[in-house]
Image 1 (cartoon, helix red, strand yellow):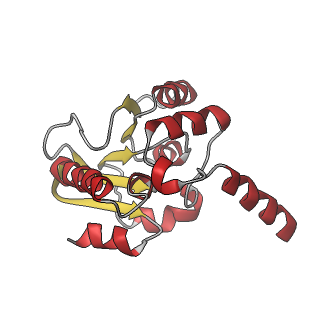
Image 2 (cartoon, rainbow, N blue to C red):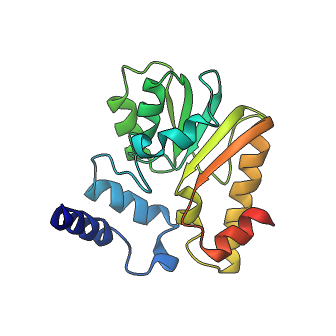
Length: 183
């Protein structure tokens, strides 16, 4: 109903930082976020909502990296469709531990504490990198230092993609983010 949608939208807005450009890209914000919201939270849509688009680019045999995975059920749902080689990273240790526990029955899914700007994987380690709002969170403003962080993240993603690999980025596509993606 319209009323529940409004309540849901209001709840989501209450989770946003008061100054996104100053806080959204910091680990302290995300630590607080996951403490206050331990249940699955789906930025920009659930797997069910994005499935048709995702399945065009992800095959069951692909090695998939999900950056900024947080506490989303996206990877679990992807795994349940037959994509088994899924690695998730987030730089908040508590959320990674919670997701490992939540997904104990999914033997091949990995959850690792890692910063997406400094990936420890070998070159070409993944066929697909999925980013569902991670670039938007990191690049919360057009400031030069934040732009440099985003360029570092994108450089690392390109490095770990195999030849012919795919970077699937779900984004709000703000103009300065689009410029970062194409330059």
